Amino acid sequence: MGEKDNGLDLEKLYNVVVAPETWPDVLNDIARSANAVGACLATDVGSKTLIARPVSPELVAPIDDFLDSGWYKRDLRGYRAWPLLRQGRKVLIEHDVSTEQERRNSAYHNEWLRPWDLPWWGTLGFSRDGQHYGLVMLRNSRQDAFTYEELRPLSGLRHHLARVLTLIETLSTQRAEAVLDTMELIERPAFLLNAAGRVIRLNTDAKALLGSDFTLSHGVLRTTHAENSERLQALIATVLAPGISVTRTEPHWMVLRRLGRRPLIVKAMPIIAGLSDILTGARALLTVNDLESSKLPTPEKLREAFGLTPAEARTALLLAAGEDPVSAAQTLGITSGTVRDHLKMIFSKTHTRRQSELLQLIERMRGS
Figure 1 (cartoon, rainbow, N blue to C red):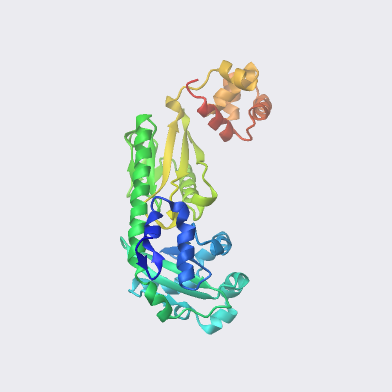
Figure 2 (spheres, rainbow, N blue to C red):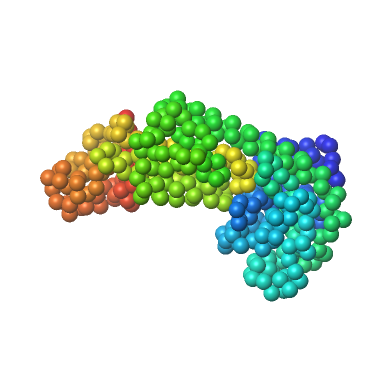
């Protein structure tokens, strides 16, 4: 057994740095020590409260509801608690953040907390690098409200939790930078983003795209065309959304079309790490594939791979090169209606549903 803090195994707590799958058990141990239903970690980002996943087992469904139903955007407890924690308060209980009348009548208590039977709340506040966090514990209606006397003996955990989060973030960033270096080796432009969506590092190939295709100012990555820039920001927001590291792990991607040149394919991948929703360091990786410098497969290769006709293969390659159906029709000397007919057959044979998916499929065959 390792060193104890109020009966909690500190060795088990620090072990989550290398074994993040043990977080639910650690949080469950903390909850039990406080006679609570469950426990989780939270932080504030602007006007929102973000809850770190994973949480203790009994809170999985309530926290899913908290995030999916948008309560994190109108978190009454957080609205009252975060200013107090920033002022230096270390221990907070339900009576610090809600009145008896609010507990009886507010939508927050009646529409979210009451169905889950979680009326009582307590938090231990701590901070690291200027960011404030809370170790949140919840009780049901069969348990009494938290008191300061009950929570103060757990205050020693605050310093250990801050150290653990620092270690997790350091390890996560090191892994992310290793991926960035790998992208450099294969000459793939890549940008590393933090929790705010700001670029914190980019490789040499990514720098080569600045000016012609992207701009970078104060960490904010934009494209040189406003329409593409809005879509890029939407992509970044999606990959950084709360819960993304648990509920979605496949790459998000988009096609950035360019006048007179083949398009760029931008992929966004969340960096998977324990508690990634509340950490402020490396959170996502953007990679860029420039089809202008990529060797597309030959028409024969497409015909062989998907059973396309010669006309369908030529059409598919023109669309992959960035042409729309009208310009592709002009290039091929056929009508746009014929191109659309070809496209329907191409979609059917390649099991894709839209032009962007077809482009992605062909891009994966580059150089073959």
